[in-house]
Amino acid sequence: MLVERFTVRYRVREEDADEYVEELLSRVRSFARRFASDGAGTGCRKAAQLLLSEIVQGMPKGEKQEVRVLTANFQPHDKTLFHTHRFPVTVYVLEGAFTLEMEGREPVTVKAGQAITMPAHVKMTGYNRSNTEQLRLVTFNVSDPGTPYLEPVH
Image (cartoon, rainbow, N blue to C red):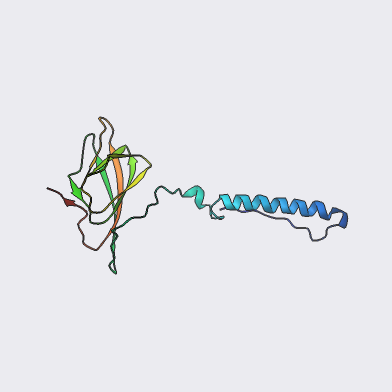
């Protein structure tokens, strides 16, 4: 957290007033610049980095929702089955590169440290295209309680 200390002298000689005011204003401006660049003084901007912000459709509308966070490990050349999700799923890649092929769209590759949201009701398959590297990822989704995570497409 950003902390700044101001020292204020209550007795300022009249001949020093202009210099004192300029110094005080300079300190206030410096503090304000650091405050603004540091996530409103919370330290959050340095600790948290926005990876993905996306407007999505198809989120559950019931009174209660189930939040799921799953991990997955793919060996070289592993792939998911051809499937859909009833609700959007966000994928964050921890290690390696994740290639997502969605019906009617160009393949998308997401590398370590990146995220992607997979849309609801789109047929897809996810791959680890590497010959040597393992793929590790985390998925996050919100669904109606008890909804299957995915539905195989035949």
